[in-house]
Amino acid sequence: MRSVDRRSEGRGSAEPQLNRDAAAAAGAPLLIVATTPGAAAVLLAEEAGPARASILCLEGGSSEDQAAFARAAAEAAGRGCPADGAPRPLPTERLVDALLRELYAVRPARVLTLDPHAGREGSPAGRREADLVLAVLDAVEEYQRDTGRPVFTDCRVIDAEAWPAPASRPRYPAPLHWAVRGTDGRLSAYLPVPGGVARWTEEPDGRWSGPELLDVPGLLPGLTVVQGPDGYTKLIGLRRTRPASGEWNIEVVCALQYQSGRPLGPWHAQPNPHRAEPLRGRYLGYPSAACDADGTLHVFVRNDGHGVNTCHQRADGAWSGWTHLAGAKTADENVALPVPDGTVEMYARLRDRPGTVRWHRGGPGGKWAEDRRGAPVYAAPGSLAAAPEGAALRFRYAETGEPCEWRWGAQGPVSLNAPRIAGRVVGAAGVPVGGWSCTVLAAVDEQGCCAIGTYVDNSPESGVWWSPTGRRTLVPPAVVRDRTGRVIIATLDPAGRLSVARQMPGQALDFGPWDCVAGPADGG
Image: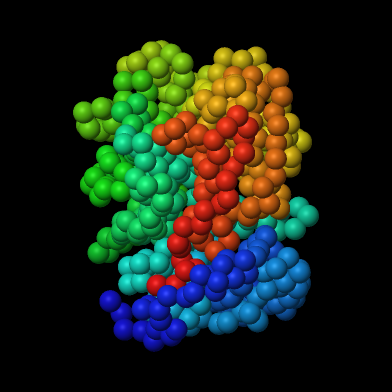
């Protein structure tokens, strides 16, 4: 452990509930770490608030950078996300120590930073960006281990050519199905942080405990959560290796949760498909996964050549090697979907033109085959989502942004009649509403708030009814049924706390008050 100046620790104090609620309303501290004020301006401009932003930059930047930051700061303050001044400089040496000092001073619930995979072409600017972000991840890992406070970290890829203004997208997509019901009927929630997983667990009396930090050194801040037919939960991610010399690489890792709240099983490391070429291996896409009817887990990744590689784990725990699925070039966005014939299919957005490509098998144990006709799915970037509860894909139509659903085998998609949303749509089927069995949907609207929709199971074309909640969330909401069959909506509020709303008894889709579970903003 490094010896650093840990300001404002106060680890033994507990704030009064009134102060904690006020902190949540105002938004917990946000730390933005970027190379230049111009890059920081892009991240700040996209922050909806409420939050209190502190900005760190490696370089002073040009006058244009500084002007862009000033404009972004003024606009962010109007949205309830004030910056605490001009960007503060970071040293070029002992960067992790400097970042640790800032983490102890700011005590952020969240960190926004850049792409750890920058510098692929070897440019000095790209290498500086990559080195900065790796230092951020190392510092956050160490801070979390010492304090037990998860710090939700979002690495963003900036598109300087976006119109009408520069924009960013996440390097690691937020998990969708991150709240699950275990074999004992209790619910658990899993969200990624650098070097670990934050876990909340429903106790037998219905209250929640957590967040508990599950330490996984080197885990990058993304997570795929999959539940198999046996009811056990599989956590899949990418872990950064730390070789004694040479370029760092990443590996695909998977762990199994048997019982709610109990320790995870050991993490299995699946070597990178590009393990002989570490520089290529660093650009592996984020894994998607699904289980087929016999319990086999299938994992898919976009490789460095924008093709697809897959491996699988049998129900007895044995892993295969990687298989390259030759075919179309794909974007960094794919989903795995269990389908009615008991197999798993994989769908990916095409890289160079609108559309979706599909890989499928001719029954259990069959060989993978590409269907270039894919599915009638033309998804906007960042919107493609599997709906395993109904063998469907949900997405926003590329040209209009309209949320749609395509069911397996259908001739075309149907509209979900949703308000304007900013991300992906998730759902849970089999929810009792008004004497009908319904699918309940959740998404993030353009104001960053959770919106809830519902339709009769398997019949979105008959009408989808949406209601805003006004509840801000930092990640896509999760939707899960509890042991009674009622639905629960889970979000992460602006203070970094798990917030849960439970369907009330009765015929209607009415929810009780939001229950906020202790989190990073609650002291300790």
